[in-house]
Length: 119
Ligand SMILES: [Zn+2]
Image 1 (cartoon, rainbow, N blue to C red):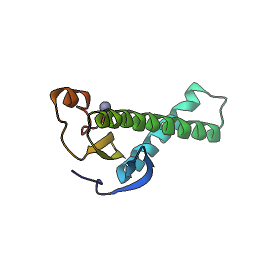
Image 2 (tube, rainbow, N blue to C red; image 1 turned 135 degrees about the vertical axis):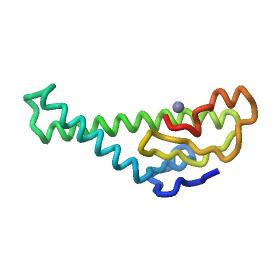
Image 3 (cartoon, protein in one colour; image 1 turned 120 degrees about the vertical axis):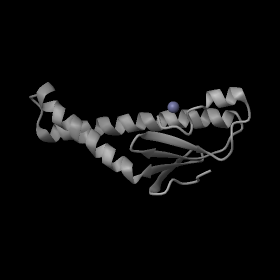
Image 4 (tube, protein in one colour; image 1 turned 180 degrees about the horizontal axis):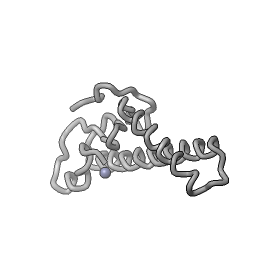
């Protein structure tokens, strides 16, 4: 298993799991911020550009925080089935949790089926 996806850096460690960000995540983060900031003036014409940018940044952090929470949930389920999760990496297409070994049963495979897929 990959302990660390090439091109990623560790930003935190939660529940003993390394939380990594791949360089491609920075691109999608800024695209989400710019897209939101660009749409706010039509929806909230009374907002200043700075306010729109701040709200867009907070919204993007909350969005990617939910992606991380999703992957953490997968990882904690994997642990419940005695699987070791080495890291979670956020990247361009979402997030991925990296297992150290295969799920031991069909039930655990079903419960953790999206561990290696992007969300
Ligand atoms: Zn998932």
